[in-house]
Image (cartoon, rainbow, N blue to C red):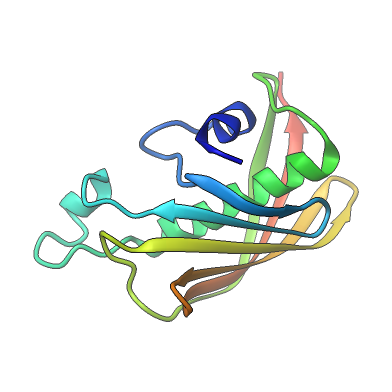
Length: 145
């Protein structure tokens, strides 16, 4: 799935869109996506000026966006202006190595459970073969007024 398909499926836009490409998608099971980390991203201006590091919360958001892509593909839904996928929880977040400009973040997210509109995922983010971050994620898809 290229960036054009991602833009059709996610409501996020620059500077918060954090998935550049989906390289694997097994509906109802797993997604593997890429985020190219660029020095031009606004958070690097202040985090940290002397040694730019991608904030952990942005890595978690990238995993959550990949999880959303897996969720909407698995349910065969299209998000519109009346629907949204909310982050509902994060457990066991661990950061193993810094993610820096020039890195390619590989987002590997597995759907663990879907029940009553609540989705639970295991997310891992890698740089190359090295684990950068991991967390258990929970989200919910809702219609809004």
